[in-house]
Amino acid sequence: MTAPLFPERYLYRFWVSGYLFGKPLHTSTGQPVIILDPGQPATSSGPDFTGATLLISDQRLTGDVEMHVRSEDWFHHNHHNDPAFSGTIMHLVYENRPGYDSVPALPGIRVPQVVLTPKYTLRDILTVLTAADRLNFTRNFPCQPQLIGTEPVLSAWIQELGHRSFLTKLARYESRKRELLADYRYTAGKREIWDQLLYEGLFRALGYPHNQLAMEELAKNTPFCDWPSGSEDPPAQLLSDWLWMADLAPSVSELPRSPRPLLKKTSSTTWRTRSVRAANQPAGRLQAAAGLVTRYLQTGFLKPLLLTLDAALMMTSDKRRLFNQLDELLVPEDRFGGTIGKERRESVLFNTWFPVLYLWARDHQRPDIQRSILDLCDSHSHRQHIARDSGLRSVFDPAGTSFSTHWGLLRLDDEYCRPKRCLECRVGQQIISSAGYSS
Image 1 (cartoon, rainbow, N blue to C red):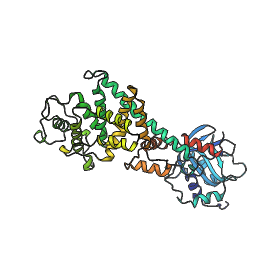
Image 2: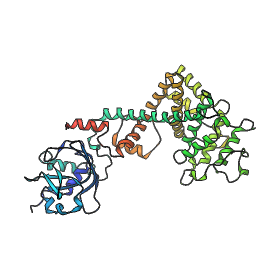
Image 3: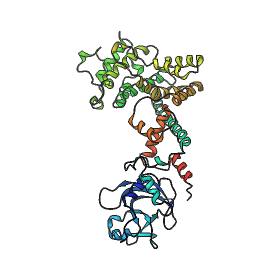
Image 4: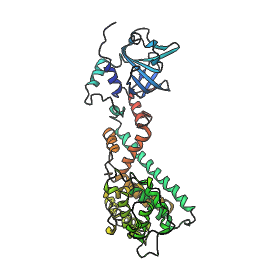
């Protein structure tokens, strides 16, 4: 057996480096091949990579990939008699000998073969092997080495994905609005419906990330239209109701006021208090909510927001000043001791209140408010530190740090990167086009 030209592991690293991602490849019989997912290095005996996804002549295949420096090594290693190689979908070799257009896995099964030479040389492989990232075997984004030159397409598409995420938020509140319109406690067109949507959105954002659903359920079970009016201290009564229903107070005697009759406790198992920072504990969040209720008990949430928007649109076009004025509306009175940090106030505005306000503006023919909300989403920086956001930015390096960009990155990851739908996105299409691939 002839000595190998170089260690076989060089091919493994070349494969996972992303260098071939989006580049035109062909089998020995001329079939076009596109790498959609290089798969994972095998952890046991058998093919070198498992779970790879390839497009061969427009046929999507998922399976194993075996690699050799020379094509005849398939036989030297006795793979043609090994059932472990029956799921192999491609044989990648550096150098081919005449007569090896494909190789047999088992009787009746032929494995397509892709030969790197002469298109890709040993110099290409060594160049990749000495790259700065040292060919990280755990690369989660195989397209990363091919992103240079796609920046304009990438940034525009990420923002478009961010707008689609905003539409998803709108759809959720639109669906909830229809539920409220069908509720006997509400009448179509009444302001209380919008106040209830803002109230539920506030609670959902205050519960993020551990208790958002439980907080939202609590807001639904103590609706805005049923807030106490005969009590001498309605905000304290509401805080009492919330704490008792959530089972977050040890006894009724420790509550600010005795809970009202007919209230039902929510399941205590829905609340998470362990491994939650002190600032995010649900009891503290409810105290902050009570501080906001003190401000909006008489007016509701919608009216002050609309008055602030109208005044700002008449006086200035400064987006920063407009945001600061809206942000001030989320500072609770401190009588109950709860606070809402700046990052959490931003989350309330962008993820909950802005979608509700956008829906209101759409229903009441106020395109100026719609434009202002979208402008803020496209221009205001997302400051909250989220590990996934930081990781995605390090790979795709989008232009800008706005909420739209943040939403777009998360959607790109959810819809394409995590499901390994590589090269199906708009950036992948640009990579294929730049490589000159044509099937």
